[in-house]
Each structure stands twice: as C-alpha cells, then as structure tokens.
Length: 225
Image (cartoon, rainbow, N blue to C red):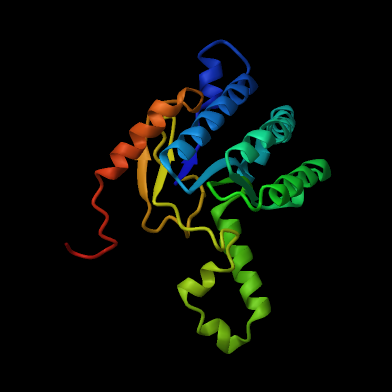
C-alpha cells in the first residue's frame, strides 16, 4: 500500500503556525502508520514524501524538509532494526545533498536484511520522470528489435520500483482527489482511498479505517465475476 501524505501546511495554518510546523507533526504520523503497518501485517508501505515539483517551494521550506528527513532517518534507525523494517528511498537523487545521500545509503544498507516490513520513501520523485528514465535505460541496453519486443512486464523492471509489488491500495489525505504525478505506471489497477483528514491527524485509527474500507472492495482487474 502507498500513501500520498498531504495537508501538513494547511494543518499548521489552521493553528496559526508556519507550514514547517505541520511537517514536523507529520513525522509523528509516519511513525504511527509504520507501526500500524507492522501490526497489521502489511509487507510494503510506500510514502510520497517529496515530489520533483516540490523543489519549486520556498527555499527555506525545502531546506527545512531536507534537514527533517535526514534527522528523522537517523532517529528512527534503531526502531527500524528492532521492528524488522527494511528502509528504501527511491527517486531522482541529482538534487539531493551529499550528506543526505550518504545517510540514505547507510540506512538502506544496514536495514537491507530486515523482512517484516519494507518502508519505501519516495523522495524527489515523479511518475513521469520514472517512466522517462526507464525508457532511456531500456533503449540504451536493448537492441532496436529487443526494444520493439519489450513487454509491459519487462518494461516494469526498468522502473525504480523494480522488485517491489505495485500498490494494492493508494491513500491520499487532506481531501484532494488526484495522484499528483505519483506512480503513474504502477497504479494502473490500484484501489484509491481519499480522506479529508489532514496528514498530521492521520494516525493508527485512520490507517486501519482505510484498510477496512479496502477489504470491502471487489477487485476484478477488468474481468467479470
């Protein structure tokens, strides 16, 4: 399952605070949902943390977000190890700082053998970028004939999510009903759950509510039952 974490800024504004305050509170929701995923036996949980478009936000907010992500990763390391959480970061690293990239690599390496939950953070990511980089990679590696014969399944192996199952459920908080350039290829048959709850208020109860709603869906994948 995957979550588009939205509403941090509005949550802070409603309380008369700066937008970054909402981001700090949103970290608590990340922790709560990760714990709930482990408790509910979810094997893969991905979080849309920062899109390529988010680089267009005010520079001070972007800087604060990057520092927050790095400090949160370091802070949660022992929790990941204690709970068997494998940590993965996917996205375009070209604009990420050296220290942040080093922290990501260290976290991914040291949690690689954990197998209770894979927690995937999408950072500096966009679905269009993912498809484009996959196409370029495939074109560079394959002959013209092989490229023409490429199947959808084979093409998926060139996406950054190679080896990770497509999400069964996509949650978006804050009342917005769009996927904002996120996992465009991978969500072809994903079930969507939209909630008006702002991300800082999305804790275990809301997480389980989404799972309960999903359990009542009838997934046909284009077939007739």
